[in-house]
Amino acid sequence: MKITTIMGARPQFVKAAVVSRAFREHRPDVQETIIHTGQHCDANMSDVFFDGLDIPHKKY
Image (cartoon, rainbow, N blue to C red):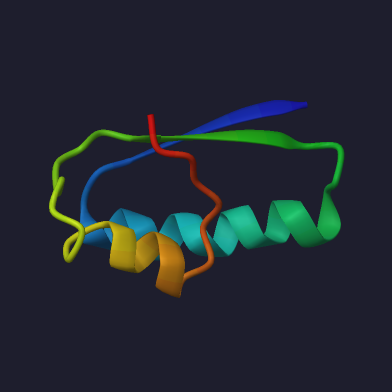
């Protein structure tokens, strides 16, 4: 199953982290693609959430 998660603001990072972790731990058949809208393009505003909340991400 393929899932796309779209997030842009800080509250969405927190919510998405829980869901993403659940997919990884309990549903290995789920292929999640995360799209960051770039609302907070400063590293202090977004990368810290990806790293701190263990949200998988790739930078393009």
